[in-house]
Length: 140
Image (cartoon, rainbow, N blue to C red; front, side):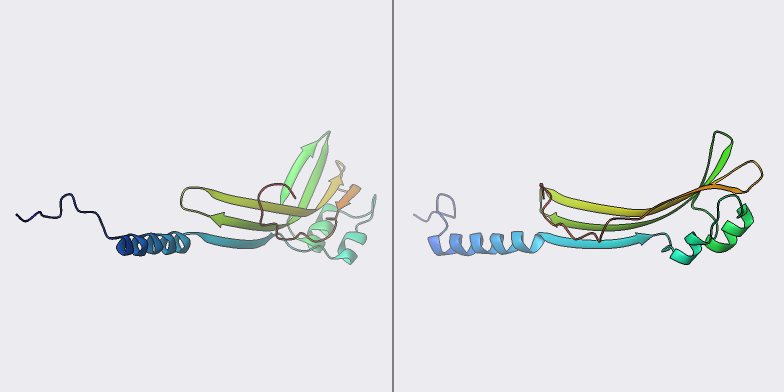
């Protein structure tokens, strides 16, 4: 009496081949990604240094640095904000779980104008050092 494929087990060698094939497929479906981006223009030191408190006007700041990235108002001051961001990301993409780590550093320039449109104060913050790719998402 002939038994069909019911009740028959897959031969050991064929099971090993299937396991190896599935393992290779799993490895091929995982991925790593590294991304880097910059937002904003780099600040030229001579432009920032040429902004003088009590002397430089709003129009002169715009001609030196271009249009501000953001304009804020606080306590009767107009505040022009200029920024530059440096972003780096590393990701491990698995089938069911993904891990990513994002590092951001920025340079920020704030120029405060009084009611007459004259510079009252300049605040410039520069990043401390370069950022590195940090692939592992947990801790340092």
